[in-house]
Length: 509
Image (cartoon, rainbow, N blue to C red; front, top):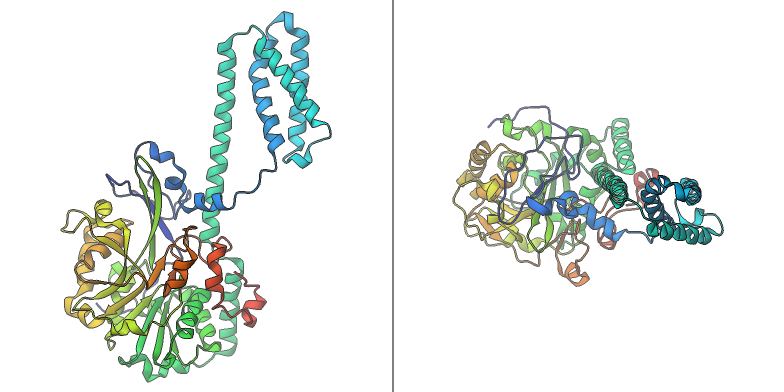
């Protein structure tokens, strides 16, 4: 596998979504970058009645909506709309009865009056004075209409038409809101875009010389080497800063940040003007390291997949972070290193990680946090008919210890390529990664990583305090306005808010 310069597709913080019913899972049919994205680009719906449950359809949007539901400001407006629907349902039948001409005119006037008021009012505060009198008057009209002898079939038909129209409107607004939510969580905030642009411009204006690229520490296998794939300046800075600030020996730490061409110069400038105690930081352009194999021509950043589960009693959504294709090129990218720790850019470190360098691997390749909320048996549609223990827990990226010596010895990259070629689907990375590391994984203690801070509102504060690493897996990342506010404080404290680049771009997550 030779390294040549190749073009790289744009990569960002993406969440691939698909439903995974507990009993039967079918591989998803996806159209990449489709126009009707709800959770990444689309969601394969669950089978049966659970197709209509909110979380299966829209994922974390439903959790966000519940927590941000505003106090009703249009109670009277809604009541008026309900009365208007009923009056409209009865009016056509009343208008056909000659003996009720006078009542028909009264009913028509009330309907027109309600239509006029509602056309000018969205909230209760917009309503005109004495609206309660109008409500009572309409209630009297409806009661009289119900007592009249009319064709119930006509009333029923009209009322059903109005209900159908209302349901269609409600569904439209639900889908529109969910789509706008996804746009918000998947789009780079204006302030972060400004930061990237300002740093890039400053880099070409000053042309800084990076002494770290010439440092012997970059190749020294005796030091503590951390690797991170990221195109987010702010996120990668917080990861490094939190790791260093909690370290007792920052002078032994070397961070390798692998990014794409678009973010390379802003990353270089940021880590040139900012220091992290005695740690060394190297920024690498991934395009210059891209293997020639077509398997490594995309999926550069860690992948995050949304799994929606359904049963007769409940539905739930989990987010699993897994390695991208490029992670399997790490032994080639760092040929002199023996052991590395791979970090995702959506974590915060709260304790010294030095003990992980003494982790007893017992000939295994990777140390990872197990994720027992999802068992391999629940992913059989993505794992194929290979040999695996259906009761085994899955595992996640975020914080991973990798023995590169054992990796090369066992040729893990070749194993992964073989699995990928067997299942060329959107969920390739999930299935291939889980199968590749079967029997090669050492489970980290549960206190090392606490996940779910990017989608789970119910995490106890005590659990957060005990965890060495907080993983913001999910859509609601801490650098986004939609991030979960009670968790963002743990991320913000490692952000240098006094940096003039952040101030100029009004960066205040």
